[in-house]
Length: 141
Image (cartoon, one colour):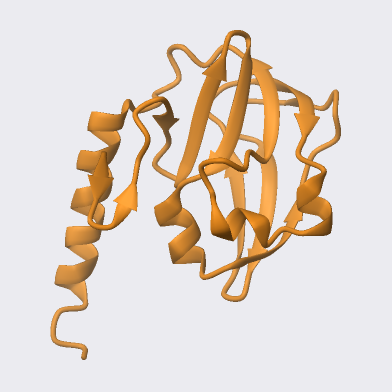
């Protein structure tokens, strides 16, 4: 599905902080949405957790630096880090080109009742967010 020009694949769940979650059995891939990546204006550095780290609900999981700011990713469920995408240490820029095929970390955790949005709900949420931002900045050209 799309919001404006931004894809939201139907095989994922979404958070309101521009994060996607893709379950594979008991493993969950975590990444950033195309919209989130676009708003970030280019990721230049990523701090990833260590394998085996236990991340408590709402605690910091990943931090990433852009040319504009430093952002953090947290999850609404407790998880254990199973693996990290080591390619991102050497070249965090790869996430800027294809954010839906580049996961940041793999975790195990019980995400079922944690408020994750399906694609229909996510598209509605992000569509409203974009509309409100456009309205807010209308006339500032």
